[in-house]
Image (spheres, rainbow, N blue to C red):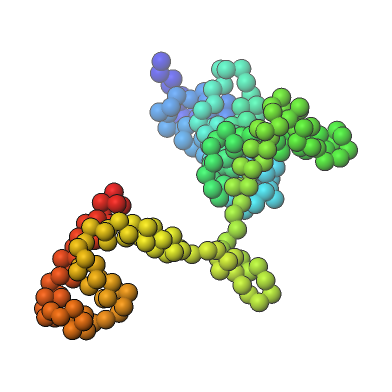
Length: 264
């Protein structure tokens, strides 16, 4: 159905919609392609910005910059303006508030965790936090795990799981000083220990050496355990240095083959 609005009516509408609610109603009454809708939309968003500011301030002091939260709230407000349908019988504020709050909660759920955890744990953390605050006021003391479990109707193990998952919300930089001497957290972390790999190789080396004949075993032992040169080995065994080189190459090829098979 096409709605025709003459210039005089448009001018009257623009001047009479002074309140934020009237702006939304006037915009919603126009079809999507109407030339006046875009201007009314911008004015409606601007008129309702204080609501976005108010709702974003509810979530201040939770580790996120106020300006970032305000921007998220504005995005929620824009979605509310674009999706609002006046004929549903709900006033705009009643529609916009949960839309903006939903956007803010989604921001905290999806953007502020240092380590990604399942959504179930994220939502469980929020429920535990809310329950803890409510119980502290009700009981006049800090709530126990059992108190929270009973309040939420879940097991104590699930509460503990939620509390453990909450640790992923914030992380500590490896550059954080942990002592007066300037030692950083990253310096206390262990490095790669080659000893484990070397121990595995020693275990596999015994059976691999057993595949060599007696002379090959002796040459390998003199070269790598006795630290003799090929010339010294040749003099000790009574063969040429060139022959030692060929036997050593053949022995090492056998060992590599055996050790490779063991690794597989």
